[in-house]
Image (cartoon, rainbow, N blue to C red):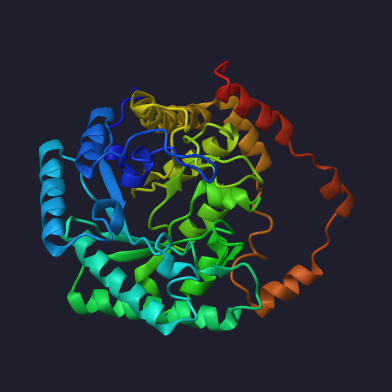
Amino acid sequence: MYTPQAENKFTFGLWTVGNIGRDPFGEPTRKQLSPVEIVHLLAEVGAWGVNFHDNDLVPITATAAEQDKIVKDFRQALDDTGIVVPMATTNLFSDPAFKDGAFTSNDSKVRAYALQKTMNAIDLGVSLGATTYVFWGGREGTETDAGKDPVTAIKRSREAMNYLCEYVRDQGYDLKFALEAKPNEPRGDIYNATTGNMLAFIETLDHSEMVGVNPEVAHEHMAGLNFTHHVAQAMEQNKLFHIDLNDQAFGRYDQDFRFAAVNLKSAFFIVKLLEDNGYDGCKHFDAHAYRTSDYEDVKAFARGCMRNYLILKEKVQRWNADSEIQGLLAYINEDDGSMDGYMGQYSSDKAAALRAQTFDRAALGERGQPYEALDQLTIEILLGVR
């Protein structure tokens, strides 16, 4: 029942299960796996797809001949295992050239190099089957606002996205872009810090129809925000092009824990939102195993991400079928239709009639909403006693 199937579209990045356990204060605790080894690991645990930054697959120092060999071997591993590549992205944050940003750098040569690197990476991603391209601006920010004008940075970001949209159109690629927000780390402050920021920014682009968002649990939780609400906003605007699932304690550094490992109720409601609204895109686990794990434990981590999603999906089905819960929801949302004539699209007649309506304010204030009872039933379902 909790075994992943292709229809679940569960994916991992090369950088997730391939994470070598390094942190800012410690050296690696696991050996580096090749992209081919990672593909076979993902096939073993039952994943559907693998995603990559350009330099996860091809080192930034590789020659053309070396790149050809790496890509050929990777493609063979995909063919051998049936693993697909639905998404790709560009690393515009690791190399020292991007220490002050890529698209927002004050150095025009860095901005040009970032565009060149991204175009090359788009070509690589599309050649391997990617139909979604994610942008995470990990260095697009500041430690001090004295060094960069934020209005100029916004304009530079827009110029880069418009340029790359035109490049994709010019090449005839079937590719859409998904922008990923994060409030801080590795920069002190990162531009377009939340999904809401990204949604507003997208509407200013020349080809906004090509561009959506890739919200991540940990990134919204770092800002103390309700992830489900931000994903819902993206869904309502038809801009949820991709999603990164992991977990995160509020107020901490970017922990990237196994999905549903920390905030179980939050994880339940994001699964409920996706399942109830028929989200059919990739469910990408942008997470890392504990630094203490060996590679057998990394497999347990990957299986756990997918299993937790499927367990919560089953809990959602149980919640939706529970007669007491549905009874409470019916009471909470009951509507006798008496306000229908005043609501909906505005008209002067509706407004005049509404202004003339008399409301019993005291009665409105006295009507309770059984949210405590509803939340407790939710907890009981999650705890397995209902």
